[in-house]
Length: 169
Image (cartoon, rainbow, N blue to C red; front, side):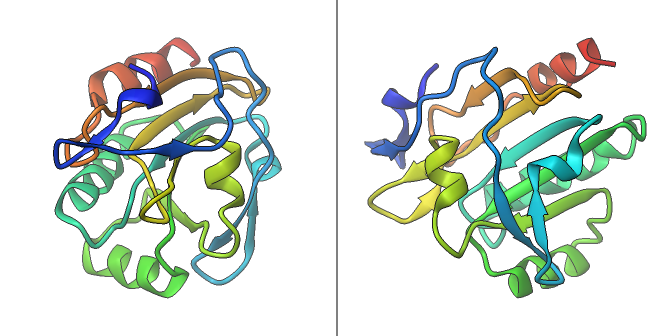
C-alpha cells in the first residue's frame, strides 16, 4: 500500500514529500542524535539500514513498535542497524530509551526542519509528525523495501520487514 491511502484513527491523512520507490537511492539526511550530534545517512554506509518512522515514541503504538524492533535487532548480525526516526526532541528520545531499556535501536530526531520527513515522503502534513513507515536500505544505500502502514495507529508487519533484511545478509 502506498502513502496516498493512509488514515489516522480512520480519517484520511495527507502525507507530503517525495514519493520514493524501491530501487531508488536513499536520500541523504541529517538528523539529530540523542547527544545532539548530527546523524547522517553516510554514517551507515556498508551496513543494512532499517529506518522505522514513527509519529512519537511517547504514544502506545510507537512505543510497542520501537521495543519490538529493539528485541529483533538483538537477534540480527552486527552489520544491520535499526534507526527509529521521529520528531520527538532528542532529550525525550533519550529519556524514553532509558525508561524502556532500548539499547539496540538507535533513535534520531527530525525536529529541526522536516528535511528527512519531506525527502522520505513521510510528513503527516496537518500534524507536523511522521507517518508510520519502514524503509530497508542495502549496504550501498539503495532502498530495497518500503512499508507504509495504512492506519497510523497500527503496527507495521514486522515479519515482512525482517524477511527483507534477511535477503540482504
